[in-house]
Image (cartoon, rainbow, N blue to C red; front, side):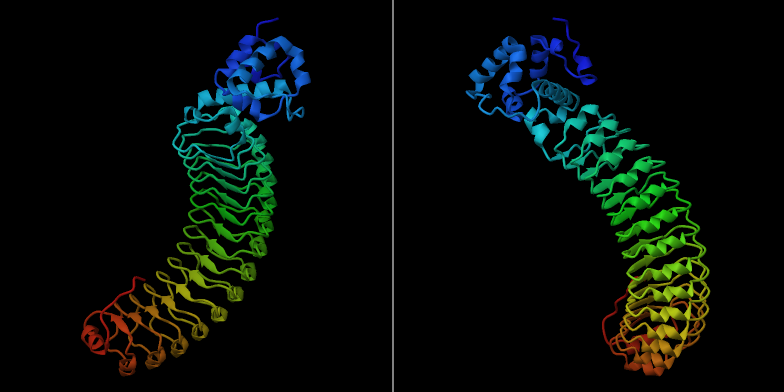
Length: 457
């Protein structure tokens, strides 16, 4: 019988001639014998191929456990397949010391494994033998690459690989057809393989803090995707296929280099939350008004000089952030946002507000600080639910008396304007607090009927 080189075991099937006592001793030296035989029932007829050798192993097992492995004649794998699996898993135990307390059986059947802070760097290909895993966390491990064999882990549903040093993903990752969550933030990924579009069960994909400069068109094939996070990358454009993500509810694209958005984004019919802050957007496609289910939109820190009239069609929008842009005016259609409760517009170039602003019946917070407003429309008094109004650092010389009708208003900041007096009618607003500077401070203090409080706008 020829001498067996155990390193060859990983690269080719075990042949009958390879099986000898030395091989078995090497395999079983790192595995619990009872766990090995409990892993599957060995068919007795296969054992006769090496009857003498296997009988010695069997006798050893029987004397240790008192169990007869031949009671069940059915088998899930051949004896040779079992030996190969045992060797691979035992080698995995040696490569990852943190697994030393696991038996072969428990490794093969476990469903959840957390190996954060392991400093693995290179993941052994034997990892793919953990076929029962549904949850795998390999975070903060300085992992630089993934073996292509990981694609064989078909039962995996959640894969957490954040805080590593991954620069690429193997194409075989597309074979994980049950994967639902893939978390990859804080790595060094510069591109995604087209095969990522094969992950039809994927619901959440997190790729923040990488080096992505483009997305593959195949990303539009992720038909089950509900959340896509791509903040802090180097994206300068988005593929039109992004609009095919019909299940997408949350899209985060902040801190990129986007100057335009594809009109196809309007097809994201399920989208509820959209982050686009800190980009270079100078205009929005009119089609964005078709995002009828959008509730949260953040466009802060861009280069927008105007909003399309169609923006008013976002009838479900509740929170709208537009600070630090170059807006000089607002479209009158903004008054159609009847569910809007937060409108944040500081640090723009607004010189006036449209009267239709008074139609925002659900508005509770309005921030207009650091603009160029010289007057307010009387229709602002129709904002019956407005609680917080920041008008600081503008050019206001007077406030409309109608503001006294804003019965829900609790906090008003008019500091750093050109006001010389407050309207006498505002003395009727017993619940109102002020933030202002001399010479208005004394007058405001005489009106306030509650303790000072401030709201950070």
